[in-house]
Image 1 (tube, rainbow, N blue to C red):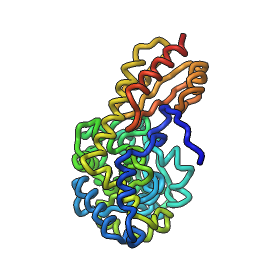
Image 2: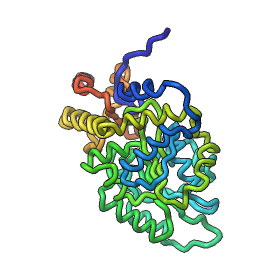
Image 3: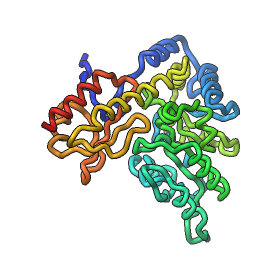
Image 4: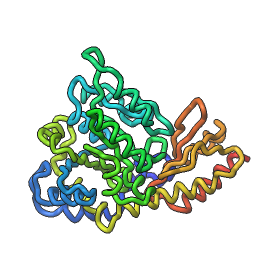
Length: 347
């Protein structure tokens, strides 16, 4: 049997391993037989548990395989063929889903004016308050990412204002919450408090980036969107036959607020990395970390030397900006070793 490499780095919270408690939960439910496709009592109980944790006990929860699937499923549920989704220019939907919203959901994306990864109120207003006739696509959904792809956070007041403007103009609100737990931990809010502030009609709630092997949840808060969701999930190729093994991971994440422990730790490690490198000559931090990502600009030769030993992404080839992402299993020793390597590479 081939043994996996033990290389460590800061490429992505997707690169981290699976939390031991999640593996234990998978093993624990690996007993006997259960109805497939989410029709077992255990999966249904975990769905209710997640909805209650989010402060939305009447919401419907649909477990899926991955974040792109969760986002595309949300768009398919919310949009009519003549409607578009308003997104940030940095949104995962816009930049990292290889046209899946267009190809699979048939949805046009409208990129709104953005500041530090966040859709601005004026940017949204310009798109939703313009004249609309049969010759132009009609905005039907606002999709916000919390925390954003640039590691920034929408403040509660920002979220409320954006949701209010969207709803006042007949748009539904979707939240790409791949790192929703990190955002809640950083803002000092419960999941329920943060979800309430977003005004979301749909939430893609992330698990993979917070210690799961795989799995996200589409949480539908608008009852009008629930009919057909079971069929849409299947048609979007996001229906797991052995659903209890996805549900078990979320069960572990909710138990004892493991979601918070994992997210808060990842955020803290990003803060520690920032403190270790913020004052180093040759390192320009582009923005202070708000959650679990640090963005910085390094000389090209330094980047290349570091990447021989550590994994991380070059975010912008033109400017030399890189992204260092911390995860639930990033250790203080990982941070100290990497910071030391950066300083040595600069000398």
